[in-house]
Image 1 (tube, rainbow, N blue to C red):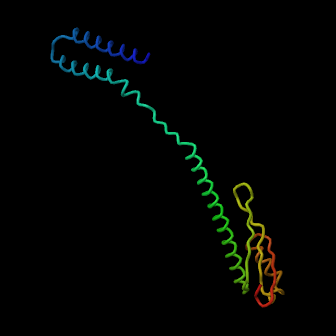
Image 2 (cartoon, rainbow, N blue to C red):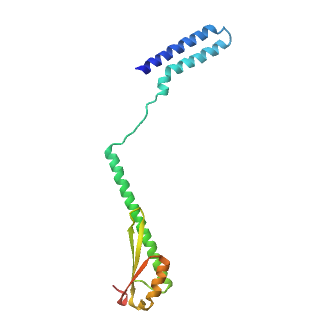
Image 3 (cartoon, rainbow, N blue to C red):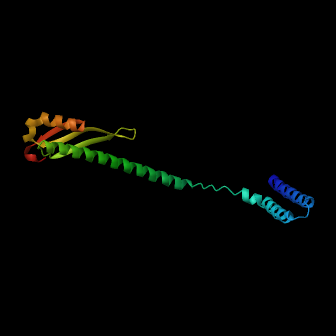
Length: 164
């Protein structure tokens, strides 16, 4: 209510000021310009509440929408984490296979043990290999080459004839 009173007072003051200025101004070529200027000024005073106080637009999503967004965000984070683990595992598996291939060894199976470290990262604890028992005499050579290439603990198991 107070703002309406101030607005009405501003309009009355502007009308009085424009009227007095027109009375004081002598009749000349500037009178026409002054009338246009005072009309624009009065009009701006009249429309000031509309122009200056646009309503603030606040959109608050409902709780169900926020819960849905949170669930989808958690699923997305979980999916990204799984893909990151799979990528790390596959990368190490390929590095191990390349190292074994350089040594002239064909692995039956390569397992990479990956765990979450609880801080948003992953920890690779070990690499397990399954090789044919014919490679047993080269155990230390294979283990040290893989440890050097991968930087993780290496466990090697041997099977007869290349099958599990």
